[in-house]
Length: 405
Image 1 (cartoon, helix red, strand yellow):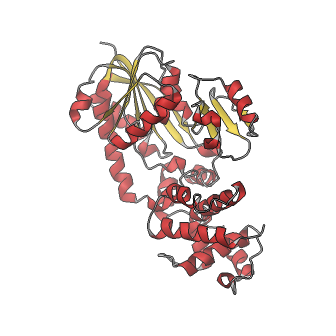
Image 2 (cartoon, rainbow, N blue to C red):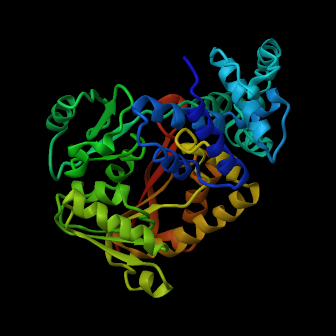
Image 3 (tube, rainbow, N blue to C red):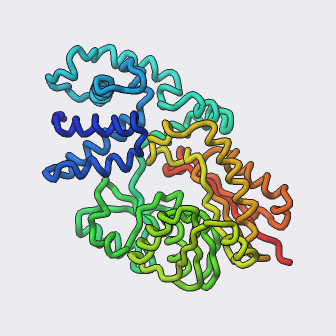
C-alpha cells in the first residue's frame, strides 16, 4: 500500500479532534469524509478505518511511540508511523517519518503484547473491573473480541420487504450479504460498503443494527395489537423493530429524556413506514405516572457503560470514567423502580443493556426483584451475550413478568 499525503493529513486532523478535543470519533469521521469530493470509496475507507484503528489501539501505540497525552501533531505522526510499521506499510520519505525506529517498534510491540492492558489497549480501571466481574479467562477472551472490527449487519424491515427480496435487491448493486442462523431478520454484509447510499435504504427496506441488538425486541414476546412502551427509545433502532414485529397494529409509545433523539426517530419511522409509533419526551415524572399499569409490554433499554459495543465505539474506552460507571448503576436501578410501574398485571418487561458487566445486568435485576417494586414480578428468563462467543456485540436482556392480580 502506498500512503497519500492528503489522506494521512486527514487522519492526523481527525485524531487531533478525537484525542485532544474529546470529539466523538463517528462524528469526526463523518466530517472528514466530506473533505474532498474527489476521494473515491477506497480513499474514504482508508481515512475511516485508519482513524478508527489508531483510536482503538491508542494506548498501545502511544506506549510503543513513547508519547504522552495531550498529543501534539509530531506525537500523532509517531503513532501513525507505529500503525503503518505494524501493518507492514513502507513509510514514504516524508519529514514526519525521519528516523522512525522500525525494528524497535516491532520489538516493543512484542514486549507490550505480553501485558493485557497494553495488548488490548484499555485503561487500567477497565481492565481491573472486567477481570473482577468476569474472571481472568473470560475477560481476556471478551476484551480481545471487543477490539475486533464489527461486521455490518442489516435488519430487514419486514413492513416493506422480505429477507430474500432485500438480499436480491442489494446483490443487483454489487452488495453481497448472507443470512445469519438464529437471527430471523438479519443480513450480514460479506464486504464493507456504504449501504446508506443505496435506494433500498432510502426506501426504508432496512436499518443497520447489530445482530445482538436485534435479539432484544424479539425477547419482549410481542403480539400485534398490544400497547408497548419503549422507555429509553433514543433514535429508535429497537422501536422500529418492535413496530415491524407488531405489523403496524397496536400502539407503541417511544419515550426518551432527549427530545432531539425522538425527532430522529420520527424521521426514521416515516422512512420505515411504521405508523403506530407515538413519541413522548420525558420532561417530568407525570409522563411516566400517566402510564402506570397501562402497558402490555415495557422495554427498558437502559443507559449503561456501553462496554459491549466497543467494537463500533472504540473511543468510548477513553471517554468512559470509573465514576460514571458507579453513577449509571444508580440510574439503572432508579429507572427499573420507576418505569416497571407502567407494566399492567400479567404484562411483561424487558431490561436490557449493551454492557457485559454483571453489576449492570444480572445484579440490577436481582436488586430489583428483592425490592418492594419488584415484589410483583417474576424472572421468566435472561440471556447474556458475550462478543467472544457470539461474534457480535456484548448484550444482556432479562424478561420479567408482572404477576396477575
